[in-house]
Image (cartoon, rainbow, N blue to C red; front, side, top):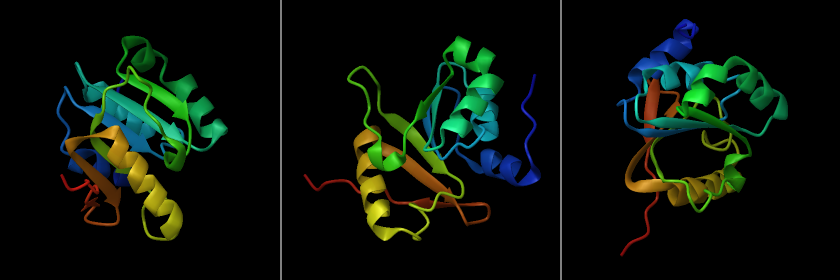
Length: 146
């Protein structure tokens, strides 16, 4: 069953450079409509949907039984500023966030911590997108100079 999205979320999901094999991180997933729609497009890929709200994660879990069972979607109750990959977790290829204050400039210090965690959780060629463009804009992921 295809996930129904608002027209705004549909435009955002359509704008992401998704490929069926990518590892995707959604920051601030809320009840998970976008995460479920992306999971439906993945074959060998995976999406991890995170949110600081227990309620949001619980809602997503209730609505994503098939996607989670298939291994295409997982959830984690965590703020991006506290995200640490498990030792057996692969880094992410694509990261996106919609209406997340730590990435849109409203909370600069928390934003720096979030970017550090995103850097640590992604591969060197990963891309980060947030809302606020047409419909998305890309932010650079800071990479240490070698």
